Image (tube, rainbow, N blue to C red; front, side, top):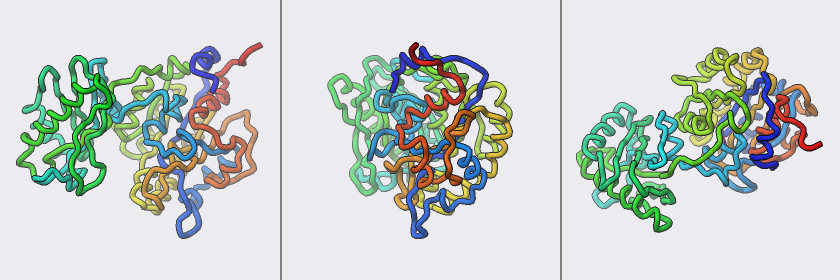
Length: 402
């Protein structure tokens, strides 16, 4: 890769528009039918576009490495995900609109159920409704506002998820999660990985123990699991890095959070693909770059629901002509990672990639699926290089050298 500093010197601004569509977890493996979800889906518009595009496969991190959603997206946005690690707590905080300061740590938390012996019976407290989550957070904020010299604030998310923000001096990250990761296992406390993070670990564990007392009368949500405890990283945003005015169109908090961290403006109050299409149309003249996220392909992948995953792909495909009608100079359709329904989990398998623009070595394939993309002219590439291709296709890069 050319490197951030040299790339910055090659950026030139113009009026071209880029749309990056991320079908979360779209990559798949063949099921008993011998086909992947993309191969099974009736997606005539994506297939037609594939015949006019460059195709390939992307690796989010490296060969054989299964990525989380955060690093996988960061890679697609052109950032080295190994160099720029962002804790899940930070993503969740920014996802619900909390901008962290340098003296703050954020944790992603689950309400959970424990028995009197400290065994975790349910990691999601029965997926309590969001209204119940809001009630519990009010109780916690009323009863646990400070531990030692550290201020404590909790913020409700969706269903069982919430965010804890610790504010104080000498709080360092480098902490291991308080999560056994499986039910019917003994609860865990936060562990520090070095001496300087010992204070943060102590405060986090005191918070968990105090919460046990405060929520002792609750039937389901009587403990919490703290994960991804981290500080906001230093990272250059899209405008500084690429000269792009960027807009994020997403429905889930974590993806909104990551978008805010990299300097995108985030569309609010979106719940469906139709909502997202409407938002894209309304904002198309106001931004240069659009990140368009589709979540349910991943959700159904994790549920092992092949029919559901296929249906979401078909739903997006029906809206693709509306995006093309807007006339973006470059459109990219890909996935952040693969979530095979046969595995019901993220996987290390490369992701299908489609890039449509003007100056292309067009592929002969007329399908958008894993096997066709594997034969594409882009080959198998690291996802962190995709942004450079999109910039080049949109005439936003100068020549390197004389």
